[in-house]
Amino acid sequence: MSTVVGEAEVREQLMANNEEFRRLATEHQSYSQQLDQLNGRAHLSEEERIQEIRLKKKKLLLKDQMYSIVQKYRRELMERA
Image (cartoon, rainbow, N blue to C red):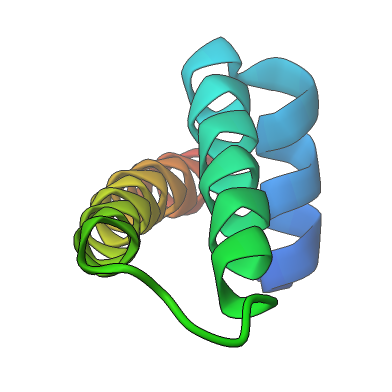
């Protein structure tokens, strides 16, 4: 029996059952909101541009960590099947 679990379903399950994934997702969302605020400005100061770059890097790092958790979860699902 082969069970294919969609990306959205995997993320939903991890949000419900994995504290680390939930923390990473919350932090990722926070960085997204901060970036949205910066992007809403007509002009950015040099300090704001640096902040934007840092936020993008942090956000990408979190995304990579979340992806790693998703991959591990998928492997575990495959091993159980």
